[in-house]
Length: 172
Image 1: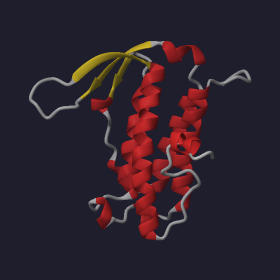
Image 2: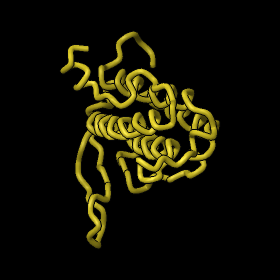
Image 3: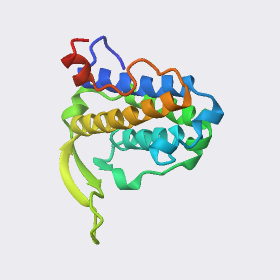
Image 4: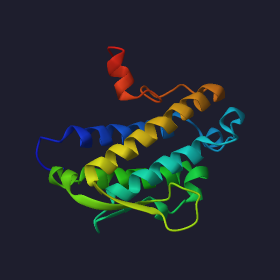
């Protein structure tokens, strides 16, 4: 991004994506796709893919839509850390180019939040709000990933699994 000033929400986005990168670096290929029984047999790679694919819609919302239902669900990200890294690096580059003025840009959001038949819910939002949602969503997955890392004997990347509001509340 050009210029020296970057809004706090975009700095937080940079931090969240950097944390994802540090998690990739903290594990090896085998642990990336190891099922963890205390996490309903999920893998770190599955949670990573899920988080990554919730960051993609708002970061790439150039057409005015943020469509969480249209996520690609690229299973290769779950198994191949190099593939996951390429996708994350591309996302980081795109995120770094979001102009501050776009945070207040209106977007239309589609997201299936119910198992009832019929179309997904659609609402008006802003790009900034959707980036906040993606980060809050990732924080909860990071908490579960932190538990998974501990059970696998992985040293946690600093900040994984702790919400910024919790850190602030604890005086950190």
